Length: 240
Image 1 (cartoon, helix red, strand yellow):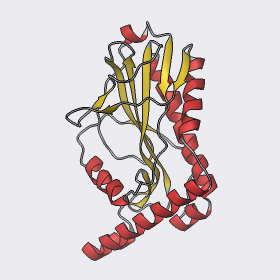
Image 2: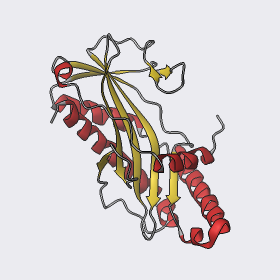
Image 3: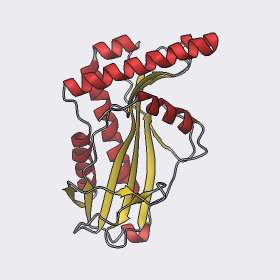
Image 4: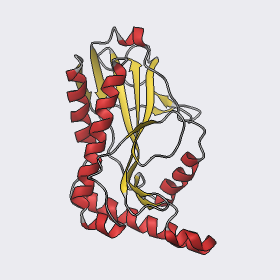
């Protein structure tokens, strides 16, 4: 499927202007009755999700032309990084599933991974429709990737991880939403209601060239980020 990184960068602009991210704190009464969680196997991030961006880079200081130059460089670096991840078969979905199962098991939940089922867009395209998802557990956990990659903020000399993940927990029978959060690991966008998590400072790169040259390390940094999301999600579901 052909993808376009302009979509990713348009999303960046829109997110930066968001007042808040959707947020539903865990329903403690409902969560206390959950013993088994069925986790939907999430799609792997695609080229349109993967970003290596210098936000407010030096070229952007030279007006519209400079901004276009910086945007073009961001698109090129993102495509290169996406290609390297694909070439080297660096996956995030399976590590995320493994981390979720490990973290939830540590808190006493039984889990199963459900493959081949995924919500479809609602009729108004503003939410997800889970009516076609059928599981045997008490709850459905749906985790999806937003932006995945690295960002260098204005005046920064380093690229740091930039991973955004949305998690939803629903009652398996009624499909009532019991919990919803958006996590941002590493680079922060100052959006209200984001659950902001620090990335491991080991995974910083001095330039886009450095990052691309050490793509294996960069991929390991992204895997570390999804592990941090899994741990925090398990804590949230316990109502702590």
